[in-house]
Length: 338
Ligand code: GDD
Ligand code: MN
Image (cartoon, rainbow, N blue to C red; front, side, top):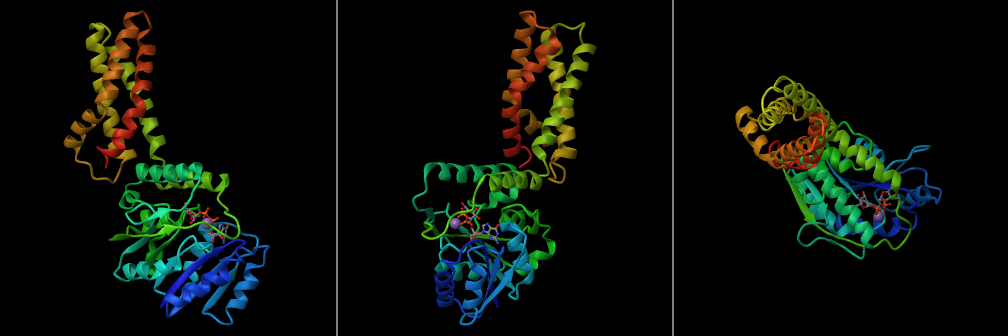
């Protein structure tokens, strides 16, 4: 048995066509509509459809949220396979059978706009850019999201067993929670064409984008902030080293300070920021040097030059560090702690 979960908010006009097209391509299906008490009467339309189609309706009063609606639907689903899709026909019902087939094979199946054969129809530039930015952010901060080209898709299918290990963040993109927390043994992407919405309106706004940012950071266990905190501790280590080695000529004492803080940063990042990634100590240490080489060289040169022109060495060092910081973070995420 299969359950198709459809979260809805003001989709009364879209439901009849959606349900009809779904039932043409699927059998032994339960269509579960999770509606947040839409003012346009979506729930009443759904109840009417339930007289002729295998439709079930859950109405949530005084609650709003796409992600929590999907989780509530999944918990109430009767099927072993669960499909999640939008109500507005931007996710073509005719693609659902391929998703189900992949999910039956034990995979998480993701309907994807960004693999060969998939695309988006007529999106304004701003929407295209924000979608690409969202994908980039998830793939940069979450190794699990790198398994798919479209980790922010709202169209996917999975086995209900996955719910056991799911602790939903309740923030916007349920697929990200599934990718990160269920750790599916296999993931398949099925291309589809994300059509235009012809009826009703999109609910994607600032609120959703902020929720998304919070969600990615939370799933990433706040790594960017931890990495920054470690960097700050490294500056203190370097200052102390500069102080302790102050009798030495500056070109040497600056180099020692950089190396000492580099190693202490590496040790703390390995134990704390990127805990659990199983990075081998020595090879990681070498890679960390290579990954941060550009930043460190910049740091060294800037510190030295500023010092020579008369800037107090501790301030010179801080300036050098800040310049090298951003490059280092990105390179570390992508190489050392992959
Ligand atoms: N129950 C409930 N509660 N449903 C909601 C809510 C809510 O607060 N907000 C939105 N929905 C439903 C809509 O009714 C629709 O069926 C579906 O969720 C998607 O909402 P849209 O407003 O159409 O979103 P979109 O088209 O802008 O965004 C879609 O594409 C994004 C990728 O670019 C969605 O699929 C997103 O999930 C996806 O990330
Ligand atoms: Mn939509």
